[in-house]
Image (cartoon, rainbow, N blue to C red; front, side, top):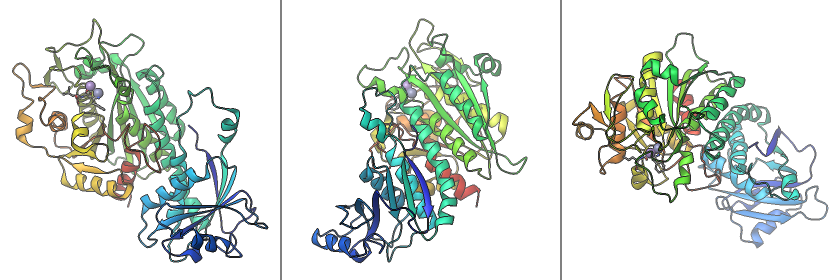
Length: 498
Ligand code: BES
Ligand code: MN
Ligand code: ZN
């Protein structure tokens, strides 16, 4: 869905009116209104009377006094104004968007004594507003006219001494917003609308942002020997064939090895012949959250012209039961040549990823590979929706990812890899089996992937708990969260562009 604001940055108010929103750090009521908002100290007085202390994200919402050029005066609490990071500014923006609701015009005063508000903070505040206001309502046809009218973008002026720099910083933030919104839209779309072919077409459309996008069809994948990925897809209807999307962003030096991102894109996971129970199965439309995050990330990198070479690979399939579907007991041969005994057709994500990872490594010789996948229910047992599971064969890569998780608050928790877990997927009949039993389910899934990455620095993010249906907050009210786009954009920025 489109963002619901158009932003401008200015050093001072040009055309007052509508809502004025100012900021207040903890116990600093004199700050509650820049003098242009509150020439007579009305806001500061109201803050005292209401015992409004400026606690983080608390709100004081006033009808403007007679003579004010504004209609409403809102004060948003910042809490301890000396300790504000990127995520605090995003949340403040999200909280502001929620409070503004459907206004047509607003002026935000980014100025509070004792608080340092950098250009980056101003841009993050605006980004938080956009992310917080995101709603997926394209299938709600009964919205009232009023609501429709309110869907027109509100004009928001951000008043800051750093107006020029903030505007520049916001162009990068807008690229992030576009990527997160794309990922959320893809996850939220119903599976009848978004099959593998339709997903691939949406990826192809990103060429408009400057990416090169190729689509490999089933014949091409068969020629490459991708028996594991194709086995998952063989129960799908003829109109819903597997697609492998290869996206490239060339913003770095020519010849520099790319950073590679690989996403699980199961557009719907019934479980296949090992069919899932009916309750909650509709959520499996989001089993392409990894691919959605990779598509969103690639769009963000292109839009902000990131100074790196990056490759994004999406393994798009549907996992259906059918006369032609793969069976437990089948043995498939992956592109690597390694054979896999299918124990449970519901452990399909690793089958898609193993061929996508092998292909990626083989074709691009990347500096590193990061895969994202809604891979296991077990990661939700371990971490709920508050952290994604991180598995890696490389401590530096893991450290960089953990750090980006702290900055963005798309948090990761490192999980183990060890030969004892690897042994759990040895098979009686083939080189390996596709499940390792009930215990340590997320770890054995990661060990499976590890058999397809050789020595390339690699990380696997199990986002089953965080990509969809995760706890909502100021910057995400959506079922599909877009988890991973902000995380990996920050990872690229901090570790490969500076
Ligand atoms: N897509 C699921 C994992 C999942 C579950 C994601 C719930 C989001 C919410 C995956 O394909 C799957 O079915 N995994 C199985 C593996 C098992 C059969 C070894 C699981 O986790 O139960
Ligand atoms: Mn499954
Ligand atoms: Zn799945």
